Image (cartoon, rainbow, N blue to C red; front, side, top):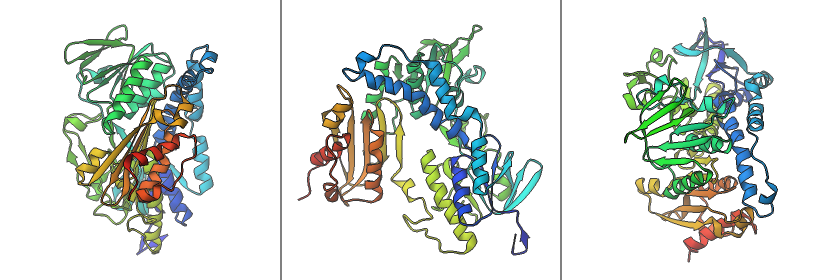
Length: 488
């Protein structure tokens, strides 16, 4: 293929074959582009093998057991304990034994070429894979994110687990220290506690502190009831592994905690390392020790700024999609961006109309105020849009209402003594919902209705006509609207 005298091997090369890269490639291919993806590890990426799917498989059995124990009649039938080996085997089944043969087969069926190896830019529209260079009219970076490790003395010498090691574990440690009170730390604390580990969770601040304030309180109470030792305001001062393999974490007050293993889950950052971005004029910035990840002092990263179609600022051929652009580090949000980017790339290369206005076919508008997120804790946390705090920081004239989910008839059917809470954040100037949070057993499936209400900017007065079926947990919508008050 030629364009302006240049010869190209592909219309589009995607670096990274996780779910985001796969979707960019798929949507561009469906529009007639000749596409290749580059992958150095497993096709399917982190989500398929070490994150979304295996972590939820580790959690589900414990959730089901606790659910049964919350119901009179069912709890009497639960006479045994969880079979950890069976849970680990089920987890392994979800990863296909860490084989990507099925994903590779899908690429082939979709007409997408797979280039095995590490991909990096070596110039404009040029990607190096191994000892070969390929040219493409457009390149999309979909390299995801990597863990950020805190600068704790001794941490780099104790072979600490990260989320990959935890979700791929072949055994359940008798005791486990989890460092980090974010989504992964909370979920894995629940998972390993249910599998039989004695878990201590250390969190510098409140659990899940980016969500509404009641979220962390409810989740911490549930973890404590599960037997997890939750310590807020606690951060390791130093870490060491003894000769017998025991890990010792010393806190700032010299309190020592010991366990068989330590799991560190303190956030992630865009993976822009070793991509050759400097070869195309993209400058790096120094990060300091707070954002080092696994690198040493003086590390530098490239911050990729993209427009709404995921086109990297200052270029007309390079795209950054998913976690790597830092907009919303969630698999489903990355796939949403990927669908838009794949279509936008095809439109630009084929000279067809580009629909890049808000909510257009080629943009990721929802990244800014309608991001859905679920924490698969027990109780579950399901939220979308803005918290009340975030909305006020943006200057919105908001009013928020809350309601106890345990007072909803449908929720009472799900569990005796149902514990949970819900909240709506309403922009009073427009009369629309801009944020929703649900905490409780089985609330994750409530989330899409809230997402639709926010994306569609459905007026509160119209929501009164969306009648929830009785008796379901969805009746929480009616109770929240009643608490808010019907417009005159």
